[in-house]
Image (tube, rainbow, N blue to C red; front, side):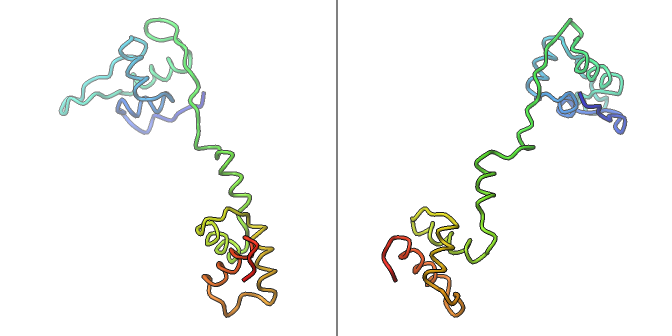
Length: 154
């Protein structure tokens, strides 16, 4: 379990305490009501529930050792979903062409309702515009590539 530096604050809220313990706020409340974690103290002026330095240390000790105020407790590992992109996102990132013209034409062709790949668009661009696309607007280039990919030469 990673060490948390809680010494920069004299007190934390219940939500911050749950984050420090690496569990959800709702699970923290469940465990607090079950007697695993200590209840927070009330702030004198606002009556807001807070964990002071002693309670922070106690909660982190409970999380680290798995021994709550009322006995042993098991914690599940917190899943860090943001650390790893989904496989589909990885695949789309790999398929993105490096040529901005190919990407633009690919977007146009897909918007016209023809699912295709960057390689197919690049090949169609070479076939339709062997001398390059200078002097042609994106709409005309996209239309020509779309028709080429459908098998209807422009």
